[in-house]
Image (cartoon, rainbow, N blue to C red; front, side, top):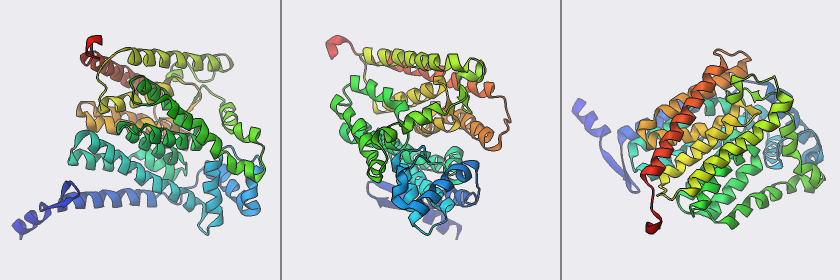
Length: 396
């Protein structure tokens, strides 16, 4: 019986070009159920964001229908408000509906992460681990299924956009990035990476026009409902003006100097400081002539996402979401860098814990130094890669 069972669980079945064993399928099914049950256990958790913002917004739609979009009660872009409008139309409990949307995009993210890892490694084992890690990543589970946030929506389109750029689909990649930006302003945090890849001939400059075009199209539902175009266009500006501290629970650079002093003076200066750092990175990577592998492209996306959120002021705890997903890909493509997703998720979940419980279990300056270590360490790694893969002008 033992021999029969062992032979059975290791029997191979071919699905497409990939061979799976029964034990592979048991693992994938088990991890899928595990992640789903994690989310089910959190489905009744109610946070302040739901009671103060999301539920009243849905109630506005229930009372006034589609025409409610002309009001000024919300500070999210129209695409997500349309999602809430559809939830209001349904008979689903608002809390369940909001979390269900996030769960759908959670699974899409996990699948896309797995596809990218397989695309880069051709390893079935690493691909399955990538799917598992993305599906049960604590920050992803907490974001949508506990908190009821919608970061999974824009993150999915960003990750799918990156997958397309890896496969030389520049136009589709920019369309997807435009959709991501239509849902969340934070999608533009990784725009410098696309500019670097444009310099490397991976993106056509005309395709960048997709971002503003799709953004303007995304505003039309509110305009059709009766809201002025200027007011709709200014929604993201309203979000930006709502910040009151240099750090909003994300352990960036400003945890090292204090998040309250110098707010009025240092905030704008910090934004220009961040732009300066990003320009240095973009100039160096664009100026150097070297072989750009697909794995290196992922490295660029992760590095830009970490640097941007670390140095920009006013960053919320959720703004490390994209970096956390990309860290999984980098850690599994390059096993020597597996410590990156481990450290990053510790820091990210520490930020979530602080915000959700209003109690910091560890001083944030510790987390800030941990992120600074990742940025310096990964920056050195990228620097070494560029120099090791340099191409002379004669070879170009």
